[in-house]
Length: 154
Ligand code: HEC
Ligand code: HEC
Image 1 (cartoon, helix red, strand yellow):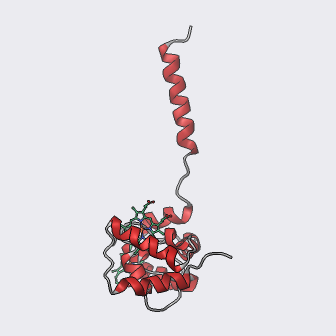
Image 2 (cartoon, rainbow, N blue to C red):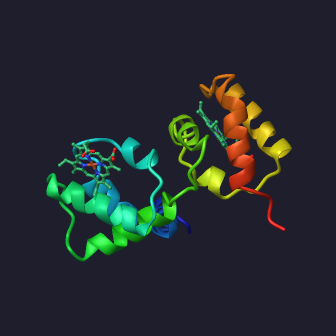
Image 3 (tube, helix red, strand yellow):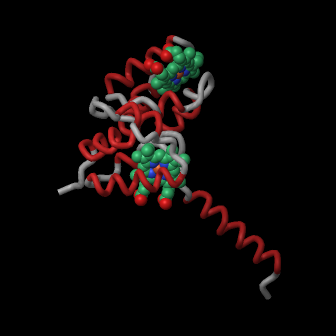
């Protein structure tokens, strides 16, 4: 006979297996979470877009200020930051993107997309509906930056 305990035990085994399958944050993210949120939150990271060289010197400067990152972890962290918060082309609209579009989510949602100007206008409309604080003057500047930087793939 199948006892209640057996069912409990089985449920536990299934739940434990599901838990093990759930993806851990990758190494670089783990290092960032452990080392980069003791003095400030992740906002200064979210609002910066740098290449590998830029992140290397930023991380070095943070270590000088007291951030604790194991020597071997530095390249892993820098690679992660350069991939998730990589450099963006300079130009009007960049600062608006970094400051306004990082309030609710990071920029991976933006970076993963390629859209026409009409497509980006739809996104901006949707974000205004979500509550994004994008002024009337900033909207066309940001729209031009997005349409020029994140074009549809051909
Ligand atoms: C010991 C405290 C401390 C830790 C830990 C720390 N930071 Fe900072 N961070 C600061 C201070 C203070 C500032 C503001 C002054 C400055 O820009 O140097 C700052 C500013 C920044 C900025 C903005 C710099 C700019 O040019 O405006 C970035 C980006 C940054 N931190 C990234 C990181 C990363 C990545 C880590 C993890 C490796 C980290 N921080 C860990 C103290 C810290
Ligand atoms: C007030 C919070 C908020 C702000 C600020 C914000 N977003 Fe969003 N964004 C959201 C939410 C919530 C979603 C998920 C909505 C959904 O999936 O329907 C989202 C999703 C997105 C997506 C994915 C849409 C899709 O269909 O795949 C993009 C692209 C995006 N945002 C771009 C931006 C840009 C560009 C800005 C800066 C103007 C911005 N967001 C600012 C809340 C915000």
